[in-house]
Amino acid sequence: MPLPSRGDVLFDFTFDAAAVGTTSLCIEPRWLVSARLRPLRSVDHLRAAVRGGQAFRSPVELLAHLLQDQAGVLADILRQSTLRVDEIEDRFLANRTSASRTELGALRRVLVRLQRLLAPEPAALFRLLNRPPGWITTEDVGDLRQAAEEFSASVGDSAVLVERVK
Image (cartoon, rainbow, N blue to C red; front, side, top):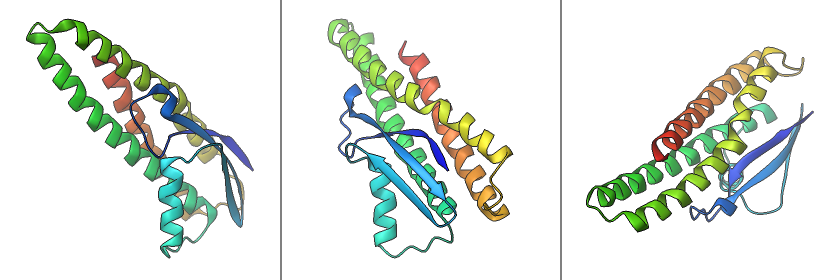
């Protein structure tokens, strides 16, 4: 079952709008395959968990883990962005505005690109959860729902920060 392309950030995220990429996923009862052009941080976290010996009962649990990793990565980016916005606001209030506007514009472009890629994902996941394929267990649906809710909350937090940066 092919899933919509998922947004993610490059392994070496630098607050550059180009540091956002996508991965395509295909999930079946016995496997999960991802395809991407460049290394992505959340996929790399998942790969490290698998290589580290973490056991997963199903491909859907792998997907839930990936969503949780994405939510964590997004939360880290939002924390770093919030600190940058705070610093920029402090400089702005100290009447050093020219550099502040440029920095805010660059940060806003990154956040908007992230939001544009990530915002549709929770709705797609919730549609899947409302009508899951017969091979997805109740436990997997619960794990995926929890991960989707965490991810959705992070996406919502990004929208709030984008509004603040405006």
